[in-house]
Image 1: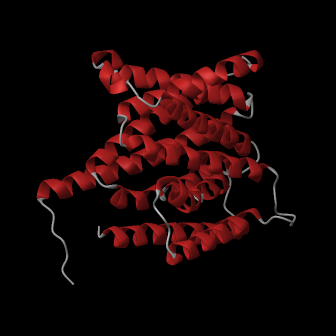
Image 2: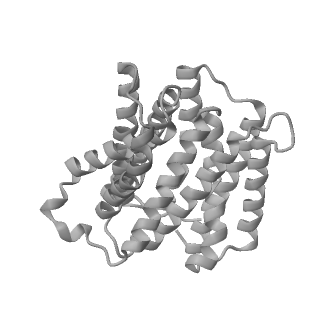
Image 3: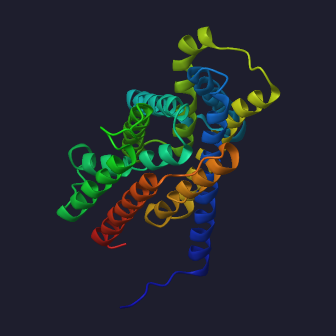
Length: 297
C-alpha cells in the first residue's frame, strides 16, 4: 500500500494545527475547571454570563471587527442566532452539571455528541450514515449508559444536565457546519460570544452576586479568557489542517480533564467512567476513520 507524501510546508502546517488543537482543548479544560470552582460560590447563570461577556471582550480585542466589517455580515442571521443559542444552552447546562459531577464525567458524556451529529447529519445535512457507523453509534451510546448507570445507585440526576449540554453542543456543531460555507470564522466566533451574552443579561443580572474573594474573580475571568482563546485556537487549527487530522486530538481533553480533576479537586475517575470513555472514544474514532475511508482522505 502506498503512503501519501506531503510537502514539507503541508506537513509543517498540519503539525502546527495539531499543536493548536491541543492548546484549544487545554484552554477548554481550564474553562471547566474555573467554572467548577466558581460555581461553589456563585449562581451558574452568572458564571455563564461573565464567561460570554469576557469571551466577547477578548474577541473584540483580538479580531477588531471594525477593520473589515464585511467579514462579520451574514445573510442568515436567524441561523447564527440559533447556533449561538445552542452554545448558550450547552454552557449553562454544563455549568449546572459541574456543581455535582467530576470533570472526567462531564467530558466523557460531552464527547458522545459525535454520535448525535453522525445520526442527524443524514436528515439535516444529507450526509447519511452507513451500517458500520450506525453500529459504532450504538456502541457509543452504550458507553454513555455505562457512565450514567440509570436505575442504579450510581446514577446522579446532574448527569441529565450533562446530557442536555451534549445535545445542545450537537446542535451548535451542526449549525456550525451549516454556516461554514457562507459565513466567516471571525463572524461566527464573535456572534457565538455576543448573542449568549445578550441573552443572559436580563436573566443573569438580577441573580448576580458579588464575588467573595479574589480567587473567585480570577476564576470568573478565566472562564471567558480561556473560552475565547480556546475558540480562537480552534479556528486557526482548522485553517492549517483538515478536520480528519485534527479530530482525534480533541479526545485528549478527557486526559486533561481527568488530570485537572485530580490536581484541583482531588477527584479520580471510577471504573464505569473509564470503561464508558473507552467505548465512547473508540466508537467516535471509528466513525472518523470510516468517514475518511468513505471520502478517500
